[in-house]
Length: 235
Length: 89
Image (tube, rainbow over all chains, first blue to last red; front, side):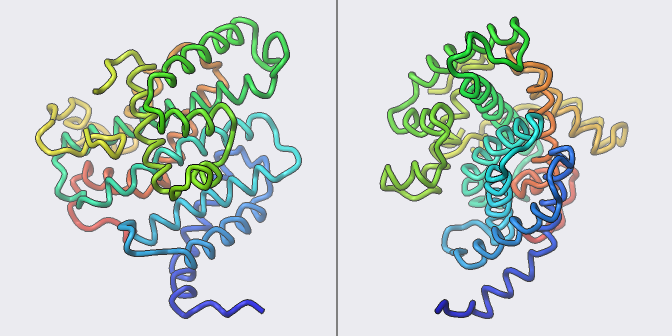
């Protein structure tokens, strides 16, 4: 028999229920309403309960932010479990998952410093860097997903021949850029993007916690972003 | 740039405030226009190997993140010069 949840867990759950439902609605819109809203809300609530139970304030991330990541992750897992979803919605899930991984990895860095102490130019630089890193992660995820889905075919079936050629070429460039990462970063990125493995599984296999893998992923994407967008890689 | 994250938060290394932020501050642009501009800038840097559908998926993702990401929410509060505490996170 499972022990009942503590009053603290229930309080955390109730405090952010509106947030969870709001995120579910945002995902629903982003997916073009291609799935049932009720299914997304149900996954969001499950993710919130899981967050309320697992939350550890010592990690330095406020509960609202922690719950935000867990809720999004639960919604995306739920959508992935659905038997069929339109390609357009599938692409958005792939892109959102990659962006979420970047955001989650960076959250501890941001929350370690009061944002109100940031100068304007620092805040703007952070925003641009985050958007660039999320865009890069989403793009890598989409290219590898397209090539994986059509593995063995001469060209991905849903892409026109020119784009299919460019993506195959891009995949090679991505692999070369990944090869220049540190061993640990390379392991995470290859397994996440090329093998489509989940961060939890990668962390278990590497015998480290998931937040460490997330930070490693965020750092690797920063390097790849600079490399693939044509800027000088950082040292 | 900090070793443990992908974004610039290190004190000291800074750049001038952008003309776009100045427009926001003067009231020439709404916050929505300013944020759209930052998303478009990020998209413009992407290589040409994305299909238009994939590019649209990235755009929707960045907008989704802008609307829901707790870290970006904090940053946007700073850029709005809303120096009051943002929504509890």
